[in-house]
Image (cartoon, rainbow, N blue to C red; front, side, top):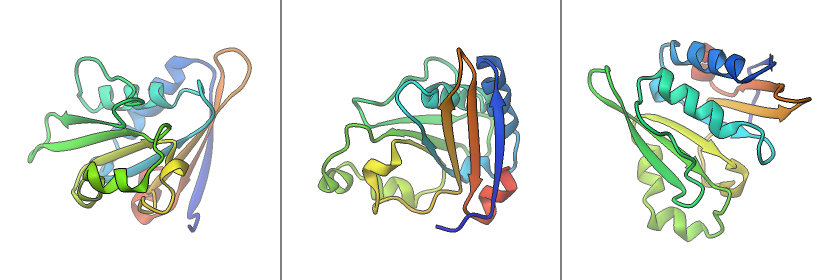
Length: 157
């Protein structure tokens, strides 16, 4: 997987994470991106996804799809309407589950795809446009390394 560009951000608190997600939500093409989120348990992957989806207009609860593996969302205010899918592959063990759940079709369709624990589905996922690696620092502080792997990813930086 080639790296086109990498940027580093420091989020001193959750408000900074929310601000970063809101800025990403304003970028043209976000509704078509595939974004991998990496980091240890409790790093803030789901928190970032929640802020991003809310910034894109999703209302209501954005929950971790840890047990369901995938949660779909409508992105309002777009014509035509776009979808977003939030994946959490933490408990993903069987490649056959990929086929049975219809994930191949989801990834082939237009829409925003956000995947936590993508390494658990290695070999099944397409190349991510962006990879966001979140690392806890001291207290609430997080560092985020955001890497573009495609032209779309680079335009989202």
